[in-house]
Image 1 (cartoon, rainbow, N blue to C red):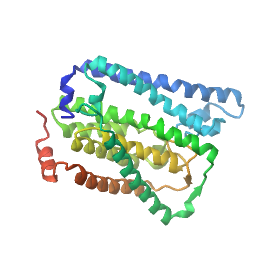
Image 2 (image 1 turned 135 degrees about the vertical axis):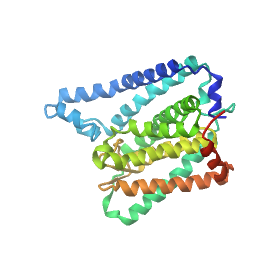
Image 3 (image 1 turned 90 degrees about the vertical axis):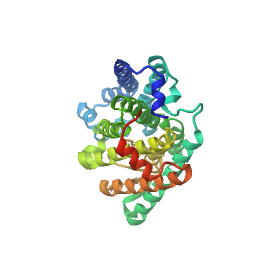
Image 4 (image 1 turned 180 degrees about the vertical axis):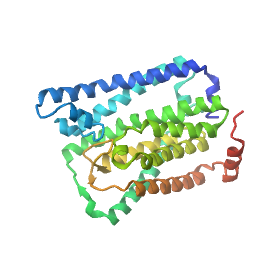
Amino acid sequence: MFVEIAKTGFNEFYRYIIMMLVIIIAYNLGSLPMLGMLYSAIENDETLGQSDLASFSENPDFTQFGIDANVGFLLLLLTFVAVFIALYFLFPLLHKRPFKTLITWESRIDWSRIFFGFGVWLLIALVMEGILYGMHSENYVLTFNAKSFVPLLLLSLFILPIQTSVEELIFRGYLLQGLSMATKSEIYALFITSIMFGAIHAMNPEIHKFGFFTMQLYYIGAGLFLGIVTLLDNRLELALGIHAATNFVGAVVVGYDGAAIQTSSLFKTSYLNPVVMTCGFYLGACIFLFIAFKKYNWRSIKDLNTTIENHSIK
C-alpha cells in the first residue's frame, strides 16, 4: 500500500521535475545564511582566504572561521529546514495528495514506529561504538563541556531530525514511490534510489578522507537497508527513526575529524577505519532486520524472495 498510495495523486513526469527543482532551489536558499557567515568571517579576518573556504568542503569545521560549533551546526541544519518547508507545502499542491502519504498509507503517522526505530538503532550503534572503544580506547578523547553540550543536545533532538527526515522523505518516500510506479518494480526503484542516495553523498568530506569506493559501499548500503526496511514495513516511520539515530550518534556521542558533521560531541576520535565502520553497519542492519521481523511480523524471507523474483507492482 505504501507504494500504491502514490496512485491516488497526480504523477505526470513534469510534476516530479518541478518538485526536484524546487528542492534544489530551497536547499540553496537555505544555505545562504551559512555562506553569509562564512564570507563575513573571511572579510573580517585577514588570516582567512578563499582557500580556507575551498577546504571547508573537505573539513567542515566552523570553528576555524571563528564561528561557534553549535551556531555552525544550526546554520548547516537550516538548509534542510528550508527543503522541508518547500516539500511540506508544495508537494500536496503539485501532486494532489496529502503530505503524510510520503510516510504512511494509513490515516495517521505511527509515532511509536519512529521511536522504536530510533531507540533500537541507537542501542545497536552505541554497542558497536562501545566495542570499538574497548578495542582502541587510546584513540578516543572525552571532550565534554556542559556549556556547549546542552545546546548541541537540544539541536540534535529537535532540529537534526528535520535533516534526516528530509533525506528519507525524498529518497525512501517521494522517489521510491515515483520510481516504483515508473518502472513497475519496487526492486528496481530500491536500487536506483540507493545509488542516488550514494551519489548525493559523493561530495561529503568522508569521501575525500577515506576514498570514494569505500564510502560508497557504506552510503549505498545504507540506502538499501533503509529502503528494504521501508518496503518490508510498508511505511516510512522506521526508516525515519533509524536515520535520526545514526546522525544523532555522529553529532552527540562520537565525532571525528573530516566528518560531515563537526560538533562538540561527547567524544572525539582521531582514528576511524572505514572498512570496520561499514562492516559494523551491515552487521547492525542484519540485527535490526531480525528484531523488526519478529516485532512486526513482516513477510517471511520466502515471501520476500518471491517479491524479488516477480519484482513488479500491479
